Amino acid sequence: MRKKLFVIFLFILVIYNNINVSYASVINKNYVDIQVPAAVVIDFDTGRVLYDKNGDEKRKMASLTKIMTSILLVENCDMEEQIEVPKKAAQIGGSTVGLKAGDIVTAKSLLYGMLLPSGNDCAYTVAIHLGGTIENFAKMMNDKAKVLGLTSTNFVNSHGLDNENHYTTAKEMAYLTRYALKNPYIDEAVKTKSITINFGSFTKTLNNTNSLLRTYEKADGVKTGFTNGAERCLVSSATDNDRRYICVLLGATTTKIRFNTSKLLLEETFKKYKTMDISNYLKFYININVVKGKIPSYEESINDNMSYPLTNEEYDSIYIKQDIVQSLEAPVAAGTKIGKVEVYLENEKLYEKEIFLKENIYKKNIMDYINGALSNMFKSVDII
Image (cartoon, rainbow, N blue to C red; front, top):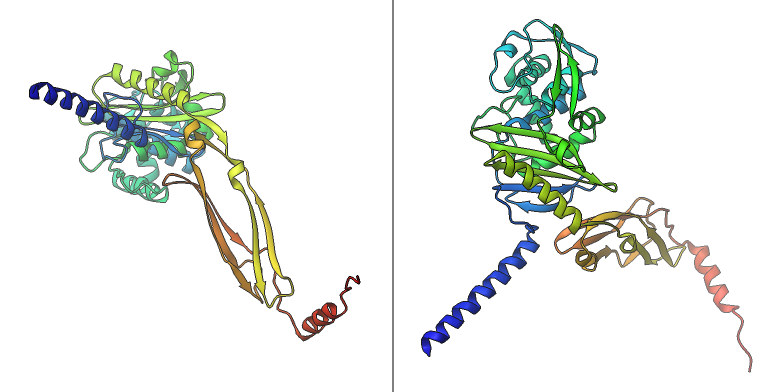
């Protein structure tokens, strides 16, 4: 009998633990079980993290590095700018497009050479053209990373070949990609399946290594990566009915797992989340008592509009925090901060607005007090 009770107890304990694990997975945005060590999905419009598995873990990034290299290229060069291929570019290892030393190529050619077949020779050429040396260009990359708020990312080269000091996180790579896709040249390049490009002394047809562009109808980017240290990495993007999501996978063990997992995460995210109008939560009425002022109170209505990717359950869990001053003592100048309104989902801040006076509030003078007293004195009185 005791043995049976012990078995039943263990059975209940296992079920209880599984329920807790399942609940924790939802809270941690880990709603799909995957065979990849680090993965993140974010919403393109808002940057909200929708899926997160070890998203803050530092890992090698392989050729995903070229997303940052591309950013610096398009922000510092005209796309028709002529660039000479340095000698060492033609000698670099890994994937290349076959650049020849001394050839003159356009910035656009290098952009497509980096983002479609992942040409290390193109990335090296960009680094020398913009930085003079690989070290200087790496500094440019890291300076840009700091500007973008990427605190767990560090670059030592422009192409992504393994180095222990060359790393990122899935989450920060997603944020970097979101920034990159706002540039029309990069956005167009990463969705291109195939294109013929002139590289100076030769012309070559480039095929995009991102096979999702040919197997997944919603896919519109972004970049593959592979080294022995990083294993198989992928940044993918997909759009459906104006909803665009970015998925980052780091450390997949096979090409099949990399592409299948990315498609799975994107499809599950499309099913789970909707872009919802939360404008009803952004309507506020402020009424602040004014002491010694020409007006008895300061009133203001706020009606903002905003859409956000949410589940149905999340929409019902949104709450508002208001921190508005209780009273104002005149005089108060226009532009004075009088409070702040925030909208939250659990601990996640969805919206914040600081409130400032839109007009000067003047202090009463002696005549205001006299007029007020006279007005009260001569108020009509009902006669029974």
